[in-house]
Image (cartoon, rainbow, N blue to C red; front, side, top):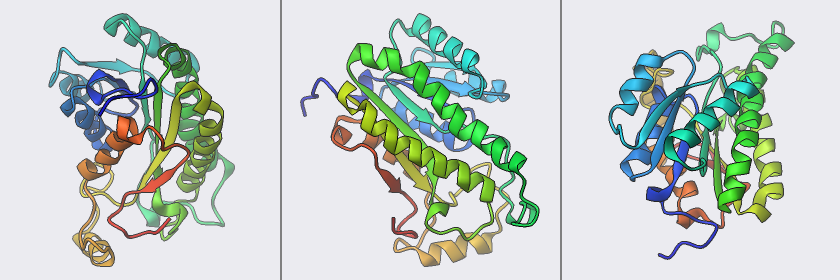
Length: 260
């Protein structure tokens, strides 16, 4: 397939994955590395894990620390990336998530939810994505191509767990996904979201009882729980030339559990 001016083969892309040192972020980074892309492994605190991941492909991977909530730190990360690889980021995966306990029993309910809970998630999810997108735009416009993939949740459609603050922040990110897609389309930049549920298995779901996995598996047409690797495949689709005409979309990747 011949790539258009607004599409690059995965092997020619420079991909930045936020929150990529572990869990789903690490799977996303490895998925792009497996396709020959160069990858920036962004992390906040997990330096050892990020460096170990980058060491798996030392010629094509770079670990860079930055708090995505801090616009100056984000700009510095993009500048360091350009110096190291000699070109701008073409593909941005917004995966970073503020500290969060995926334990429904421990989350605040309607009577105890505070604005501080919401603001904590909005800062990390929505503000973080705004910072990274704004830092990425000059380079994407320079190249005449860009792919932005935001990580969401299927709790929009199926709010079975009281993650009010987490879900609200991801909903804000979905809104940004669609409005940015409209504004950035003329620049050859697509913006999409991938939404999943419980994944088998990440750091976040490591403590999930087996009975919960079994219940979810039985409720899906595929009769199994989606893996982080399968979820990451969808990011490859959106970033690849085969996704060049897809923008402003929210793709639910959960084995068919939720219908968008």
